[in-house]
Length: 436
Image 1 (cartoon, rainbow, N blue to C red):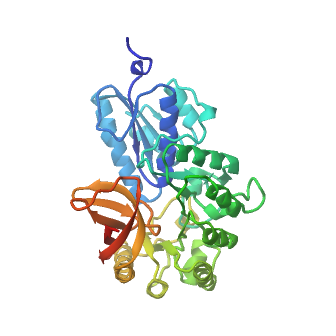
Image 2 (tube, rainbow, N blue to C red; image 1 turned 90 degrees about the horizontal axis):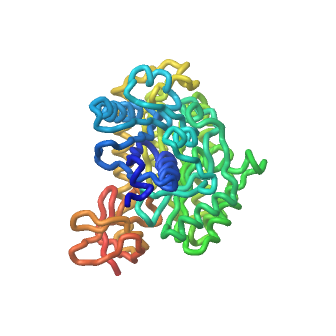
Image 3 (cartoon, rainbow, N blue to C red; image 1 turned 180 degrees about the vertical axis):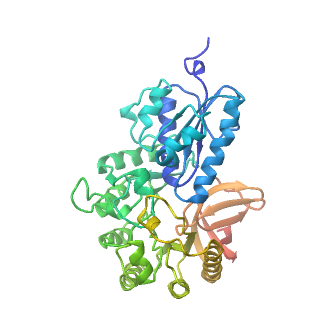
C-alpha cells in the first residue's frame, strides 16, 4: 500500500546566498516534511519534481548566480523535466515584477516573508507549532540560528532593508526553545546570525537584550559552542563582551564588519561611526577578551573612495591584524542612497584594491598561523575529504574561516566529535595537526 507521503510530489530546494538563506530553507523544508512532502536539498534533478529556488539578491555577483540558476531550471521546466518551478528569497522579493515578465516558465514567485503563501500554493498548511523547527542542510553537529530579521540601519551601500524589511527581533523564549530542540537532535555548535545582532531586543523589549539572550543560551545543557556573527560597530553594546569572556561555551570570536576606516568614506557610507571610535572599540574588545578572534568585512570602491582613502584602509588592515577578513567590491544598487552617488571607481580599480587587501591579509594570516605551531587546540571535526579529516577551532566559523587538516590514514576520528589536536604545520589559511 502506498503511503500518504508517496502520493505527494518530491520537492527539491536549492539554496543560494548567505547563512540566513540556509535557515530559511531549513525552516521551509521542515514545514514541507511535516506536510508529508518528500523533500531534498540540492539533489540532482529528477522527473516530476517540484523545484524551489531560494535566491540571493545582495550584490551583482550574487544576483547573477541567482538568475542563472533560475534560467537553468526554467529550461528544465520548459522541457517538462520538472513539474513546477517556484522562486523565493531576496532576488524574488526585490525584482519579482521584472523577473516574472522575463522568465514566464516560473510558476510562482514569493518574497522573503511569504512562506505561508508558498506552502498554500503547494497545498500544504503552515504549521505554527513548528516555528523554529529546522530540517538541517548543514552537518548534523552545527546549525545557524536567526535571532532577528531585517535591519533598521541606513548604510548607503546596502539593499538588505529593501529585501528583508525593518528589524524584527525573535522573542528570547522562542530562540532558546529553538536551540534546545537543535541540541536534543545532536547539534553541538550554533552560529547566532542576524542582519545586525547588536540591535537585538530594541524593538520588542525597548532596550538591547543580546547580553541577556547570550546568558540564557549559554545555560543550555549540551551546547558546546556559541558563535556570534554580524555585529554592528556603531553603539556596540559593550556588556556582551563580559558575557563572552565569562561563559565557557561562548566562543572567543566576533564577526564585526567595519567596511572601511577612512572618515570621508565612512560618512558617505552612513556607517554612524568614525575612525577614532572604530579603533577605540577594537582596543576595548581586545583588552576585555585577550586572544579573541576578530573577523571583519571590508568594502572597496565605494563612490568617492580615493587612493588616499584606500591606503588608509591598507594601513588599518596592516596595523590591526584581523584574524579573519573578507573583502567585497562595491556594487551600485538601485534603491540605496549610494545609488544617488556617482559610481566613479572603475571596476578594474575595485578588483585591484580587493586583491591588494587579500594579499595583505594572506601575509597576516600566515604570520598568525605560524605562531600556533606546537599549540594544542580543541577541534570540532566537520567532515572527511580524501585522506584528511577537516575540523575547526574555536577561532573558525564554517565555510568562511580556516580549517585544521588531520591525516585520516594515520588517525581515526568521528565527524561531529571534538578532538584535542597538536598543530604541526601551517600555511596562509589552514593548519595541519595530529590528535594528542
